[in-house]
Image (tube, rainbow, N blue to C red; front, side, top):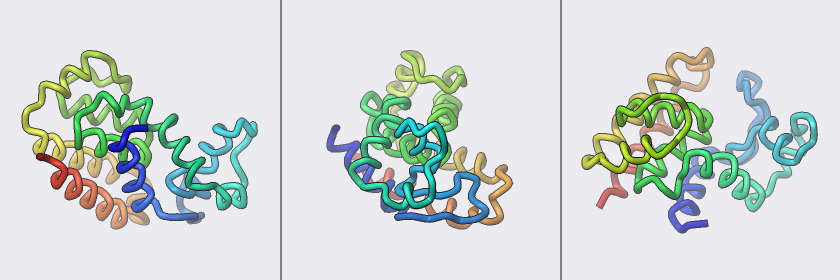
Length: 173
């Protein structure tokens, strides 16, 4: 695992926090950004993980899940900094396909939810990463505002996206 991915995972852990099981969260029991469904699939349980199983999730296992289930599908290692972090955080929060679609829309690539060579080339051709960071975060918030759970979670999501944006902008050299 790269140092930048390790840092991004640490930042996501900071945003996601520990175990939660909010009754209005369609993801159900969650820890470190890993939902009961994701954990159940990861462990090949044939069902969602039960809340006590989610609560017992270790940082080490969560790190492996975030790498395999979120960083690899978005081709994290091939994205420039800080775009890698911004897209990764969205992938954990809203799913890799949604994060990829938002990235594709922002760079003018075909929006299909799969990162291929054309999307990577479009991202690499962006000279103004600060503007791209802002576009990605604005698009992400636009997506979230349309979710039925916006009234419950919107304030926290807004704070998270604002934090991601500020952190990413500070990473630009």
